[in-house]
Image (tube, rainbow, N blue to C red):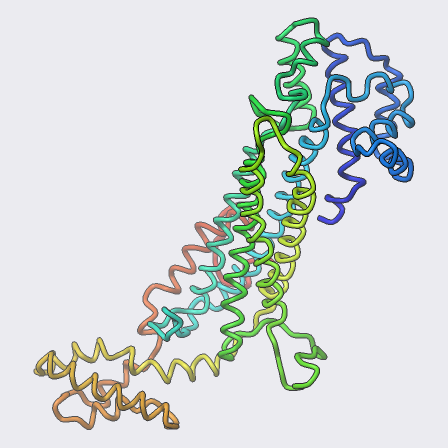
Length: 459
């Protein structure tokens, strides 16, 4: 990603655009010598950036600086470089190429993260764990099922990336204010050749279509649409990182840690979720840039204003660079998550008696009790058991309290079967299997997996 947004790649694209324009103009009848085209082809990546800097110091114009530097390298092409074009021909079209390539890099990163999380979900498909709603203990789920929630967000992001890659248009060859007047002059008023020029250059740069109309620049709504996808990836990563940070604070699941990793310069015992915290930090930055792109679009008066330029040179590359870093971090965390089953089971044991009370209420009525009386009995003893735990009791004794209350009418032996957390996880394991097989497998293997067991999901 760093290489993609480097000056060498960006300005190499400018030269490729000038070559594509000259080649297309030649194919449509403009007399550009073969020697000129040959010199352009031979110097696409041989850019003297010191010479460019000197030209820009003279002209105070980056595109003209590169026009002159390219002409120095390809002197036979000097009369024809940038013929009929405006600066946005190279700057805007290159940005669209760069964004599409950058989305492809993020796509590969997303698939890697999904692959790691799919393996994790399969391995822990049926391990019960406390579910949480309102950040309060709720009906149990499984570790694997929770992981599928993270994966589902990333799959939706992947679909958005694919849609944006396939639909992103080229700016094309539109001229100074988008009217193609200079190219109409070049071709002696021949509208058909101007249309074909736009189509030829678009195909040479490997785009299916260009925008049918533009001002001097392509609509900055395209930037906003792309950055909404990038910000969406970061939001999904932040959701994952936030969950991991909270689970690590509970002691249930922890991000990977190096053998000599230091958590605090003062508190030597600390084990901090620093990778997940870094994901959250970077994601906050990326998400903030999505709104920036919409502000820029909204302020592009008429055919264009230049208050977008400096802003976009920061916002677009930084969005992709930060999100690339986020996905590298996320892959690292996802590939090494540590599960502390003893802690998870202890926390379940503290809460399962409360969660079993709905079923116990039914059992009490089946044993001849009054539903309203049983409800009040459960409520009173639940409050007392919870208070006792807060006051230091070593375990949840709700079942003992209910069994000793003759008005409830359910024995301790009858209650014992309700202590198995798997009784309350519903179809969570099966949902994991079905989701990995039907939704995830095509993305990480190319076709359906025959099994969703961890050892058969390749990382």
